[in-house]
Image (cartoon, rainbow, N blue to C red; front, top):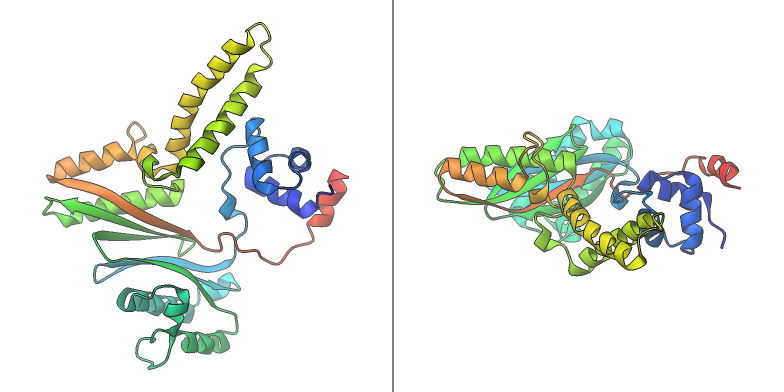
Length: 311
């Protein structure tokens, strides 16, 4: 089947693999992007793909703790100039306060909630802001954590917003827990874990990863023809065990090396801090919003350049 230059570019952006190999993968997988990523990984050409971060848009992702309620929110604008505008920033702050106080079920419910001090809906005020600022504004997503200790972190002025939710017992010094939460939030911003712990990963996702790593290990062992096939299979299966530990250390926060002290894991650090503070601390959940994550921007004329290279 014909493979478009746009698809090749997308796969390259997702995996970091050269364009010719990306085209080969797409041809081998009949244009299926997810299968092509797996194909490249099985060949040992691509690391774990960060599929959601392929394109950026403008706006801000921010996190708050408002009267104990944690809120993370992303609001998009058309340009970075407007995203830095004080009126836009104040609007985002106000909308976050509505999330905290009104507890809307989703974005549509949030738009229909009352905007602070206006007697009108968030949607109506948003329309006013669009006219005043001169750009389209969209409330994209939010989360709200009502329980536990909520610690917000905003990176690069709103390029990344992180909200960490902790449960502490037997600890009088909540400031120490908050300090830990800030360290964890910075870890999450930098290392982009997907889950808190390995038990949260869906079983089918774990099995898929095992299959990819086994296929990759078998591919690597094919060159050594002096070893019997059955033994090569056994060696490949043993390799998978170690590689799955590396996979968990990539996608699970508690399994990651703690960035401030790389001789310990995040889980070990949390336990050490809890012991120092005289109680227990559990990392319950977190949210990491990257501004513009997965939103398609206007296409530049890059396709023609790519097409000329892959004919």
